[in-house]
Length: 605
Image (cartoon, rainbow, N blue to C red):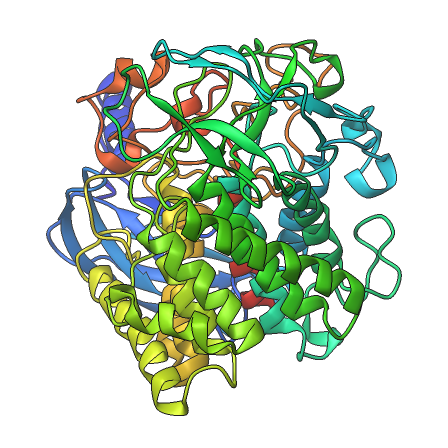
């Protein structure tokens, strides 16, 4: 509450003024702004148990909207006492300022195209993290982010030696693969088929959904955003860079390897068996040992190694290559055939070797997954959507996931990707079956919207357990909400997607935009070996459009996070620190849904 008193005695007056200022509401709002016809919400943090008056003024100082807050009360996820404000009646483009109970917030913008630059920057993230070619200033946004090629002409041998569990891997007898290209995964310079799979799928899915939309309604609008784009869509060109890498990770025919078969106790010495690995995919290519921060890609001196094939990687290849074939068929039939051949070989290899898991290796991320039922379902769904071959349809229909409740996807839980593909692809399923797939997605979206009522910051994510990469979890829910809006034509689903983006862009207890370069208080010190200006003034900060993993109170693995463990509310367990990899790393599978949702909001403005 603001005190308006006349008090004699400057010392006492100063104390009371300070107390009054401290008692003013903190206002949290999307720092990028709002689209004219979109839902618009802000949050005020205030201990008042009564509603508070608010008003919005335009750039000329005229009041254009006013009302009373809706009190939510104590919010467990943030630790705040919050009030909600609905600004949706403000629909005219312009610049505005919100005041709550006399406290004035920062200005905000209403404009139809606010998500166009964000979507382009989020796509540019993938170009900037390309391996194998120089990053050019003209595409990177300036000379600040240009760099020499990292790991050009990458012809890698198989790992040979003892892993962290004591397992002795014999290697591949002189076998090498040219795996130049692809995207670096995250803050490190490993390239992983598993995590590359969901990121690639997300870009290809966005293209599949938008390709029938007129260019003037798409975020790229024909602009040249990536090298060698020509007349092609930049989404598809960028996705092909990663697809080519995944194809290169496939084991050629007539190759036997020593691999662990079946589930074996973690962190124990594995038993290896002779396996026909033809058509499988290597799990990753990465450094033998972790490189320190900072280490720009072109200065990485560690040996680069191929790590053993796994069933999970093989199914990621099968799924994305089948999706690739579907998208490229009308554009480049030869490339589509190449992708489909790789997909069918990979799926057959996974069926032949259904339980080969990764070992324990240092120097790179593990991406171990002990349950592959969702990967089999996803890969079969993509192949069925592309080929309409009944044998893949049988796999899909016999999977329990065909009728199971949908949850937001992540790299280790990809069933939703198969459901989405079946829901949007015509001709494979019967109309009734496709309708049921769509209903699974809208039911999930209904559940997410119901969680908004339990969230003080009005997001479709009501929990006090925030995982590693929580921002991506929230944005993947926004993707499902957007699909529900497509299927059911109900704007409330789009509103839920807006709420998710509002949180990421500043309507959160920390008053921070988790996207670099966007917002008044944007993230700027990610855990990254090249975007590491905080450690070396000769290196750049992150380019615009890079998403931080966000709050994490469940896997607080780094030294900074460990000092916070048990001392922060879930949504406050975050620091903008370069060494805070559990809180502030960046990753391709996190930026992908940022791109997807920003492009969707831009398209549907």
